[in-house]
Figure 1 (tube, rainbow, N blue to C red):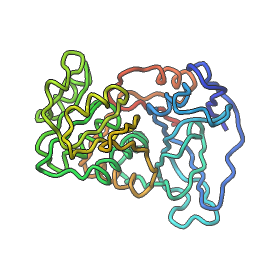
Figure 2 (figure 1 turned 30 degrees about the vertical axis):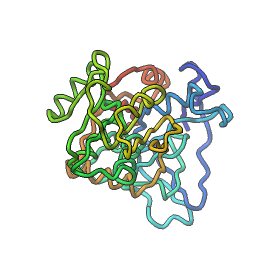
Figure 3 (figure 1 turned 90 degrees about the horizontal axis):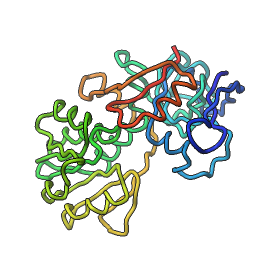
Length: 298
């Protein structure tokens, strides 16, 4: 099968076209014929070696999948050949076929496209788990969401709105800030290139940090003493801080896709293109896209 392999850690030139054997299924896995794969910040950081270098190249990276089941393992009980599914396995997705465990799989509703589904697999699923399982927002609370036009940030804004908090503050810049102001006029959007959020945001109860580093430390200045900060990138000795990693679960992703199906959640696709090494390299180099970058196999 055709795949794009990462021959080493480094810049986009390490991504190369290869032919590799079809994956061999384990008993609880399905074989997925890919229709779409998304480019997430995690994938870009992994290729650059910023997420650790424990995995030994060459390897096939990419952590989102959406397609059709063409084979099932002998112990698979919840899925069958021909079904449309999406998932966020760790790596192996820059390929025509992917073997994925059934616990990570989500059925795609009929009125949801492969591109929409794969755009939700990693970042949106992460935001869903943070907001619904960890944040525990109430109507009396204020929340600050950093990186509001990014994958996790924009999804977190939409999920947070479902809890009707007192106020939602978010940071963005340029086109991202303009998009967010148009998307929801009640959002308190801070363009960080012209404003320091510490001078604008009142004390808040909850913070979602997708930036890390100094941004996290600065955020503690506006977090209430009994508040909670959840970061997807950094940890801190402050006991109010929790570092969060996605626990890829099909049932969680399916709940997200059902919201897409009913119109409760909006998926923004920034750009899509055919699955080629040239397009993958281009998307890995794209900065500040407003919406998801998706490669298609159709």
